[in-house]
Length: 90
Image 1 (cartoon, rainbow, N blue to C red):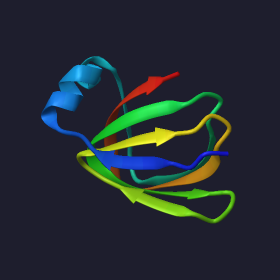
Image 2: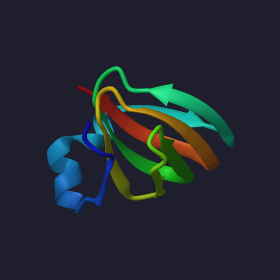
Image 3: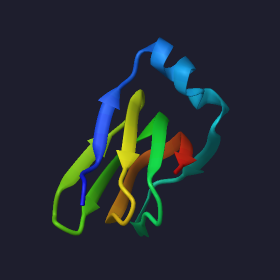
Image 4: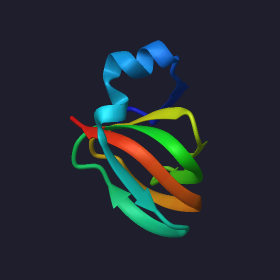
């Protein structure tokens, strides 16, 4: 299984991908298990999150981070500060 990818995008890349027109999702401080039935790309606008995979890898991300979660990933989300993100499946 491929890993979670976290990177920074330039304003041009954000425009190119059309991220600001993607759907949005928000969540208050919480912990919950999650499984990705398909690949998800997301761009964090606000908040701080720690995701721990079944294999024990922990990835942290926050505002300005672009993340790609692979299909089939099982993990636990720990939302440390309320999160607001743009996302796209597939």
